[in-house]
Length: 189
Image 1 (cartoon, one colour):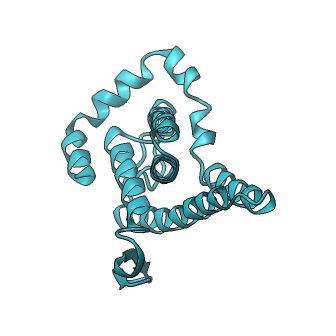
Image 2: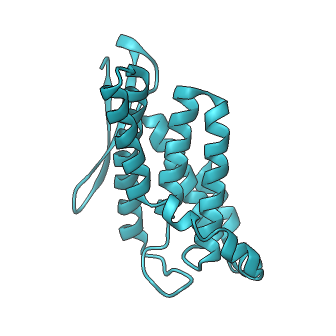
Image 3: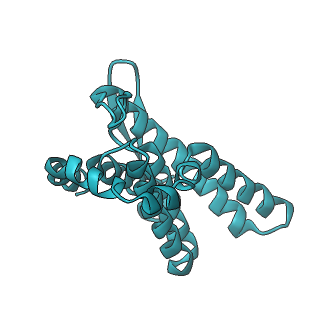
């Protein structure tokens, strides 16, 4: 669904980018989103939560941190595989625009937090994801279709870690080599 939305948004990429970049207050106001959406910040936050949960004897916090770490790993495999395969030019002329990795990692984190901690935590994290996506466009790094695809990959990655429960669970994970991309299915984990 997210990739279809990205395809539908593609014809309006340039117009949307121009609209977002037209206002200096938008460009300046969302600038921190570039740092907040980085894999280092997302992964570092997850690692800190996991360690804090371990050290303070809070297993739910530790598990949530571990869930986000695993989701970040899955997200990065998908994002980097698609980026290298597609090699779309960025609005600023650089390589590997599609999909937005910053947006993907932020939405992956948001979905894990929503699933593990509820909407009171998830909703602000989704807002952060939209903020990061806007920052990536405002700073001329991505088009609208790039950030939509990134959000979709992040959400799919978060869902791929846990479909079902207990013996009847299904785990879906990407597997990539230099020449191929596969999907591994495991039941009864």
